[in-house]
Image (cartoon, helix red, strand yellow):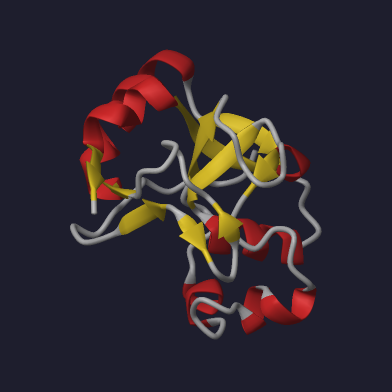
Amino acid sequence: MYIIEPFISALEETTTFAYDPIYGDWSILKGVIVRLNIHDLIDVINEKANIEGIQEVKFDDIAWKGFDMDMDKRGSNCVCCGGERYIHCNNRIPGILLKGVKNPGGRKYRCIDGKHRIESLLSYNMEVGNFFVLDIEDVKPFLYKI
């Protein structure tokens, strides 16, 4: 484990669960496009962290948007931000994972916040990171259709 800083989320920071022409099918509810405001999860994250703690998870067990892309489209070449979010991310803030939900990689966890932090830690040859791990039932009340 490494130095951890408190989780912070901007009010407008969201993640969308849908088919994406670049990343593939990241939908979470069949046939429905939904969005999640990460800020809405702060109380749930704090509650889970008090009970289960922050968990150390192997990156090989996590699917994140772009994990399966060539390196010329990741990190400092990220297709979503041109590398800006990767360069300026704070990799000491734990990411947020969902466990037990389908993802394009068939992996145990699905990243819903922190893909640039994962890429940053990978650039230091790290194999694990610190994460808040949630279940789909934790986030369902906060999903909204778009």
